[in-house]
Image (cartoon, helix red, strand yellow):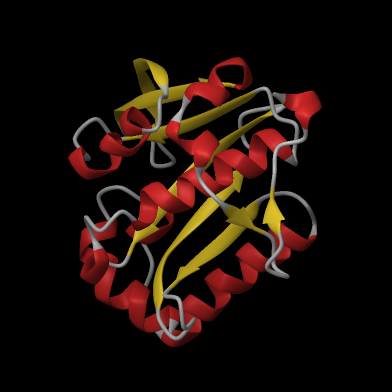
Length: 183
């Protein structure tokens, strides 16, 4: 399931996702990638999640609550299977991670980084109330200069964003709510 979804979407993902740039269309390579993500999750170094259809029979995409931007902050990343683009799945998944970040992880800031040319991806933070877009020069892993849009949402602005109102559930199906002390 994972290998098929990634393989089908690689051409679409390669311009935007660093991990996809050198990924081989091979089930063994995908298994290694998933194991790497899983190891980081269990080591509490980085948090990756699958996005599935309601029956949990098809991988729609993946998202993450990444620890790479410092203390009390996370970066949200996401990708959607090329067969499921523009249906709101990324927006819904990002909204749930925003809720988790601010209500469970007690974060102070969440960011989304994307390429300024990725017109689909940059619509999501804009729709969810992120602000302070910043284009900065960045050095990618291969020493190629590039530009990155950085969208930021502060905890103090969260309660007026669309993400505040989304329903999110834990793995046992219990609703994640906002304790009155955090409003």
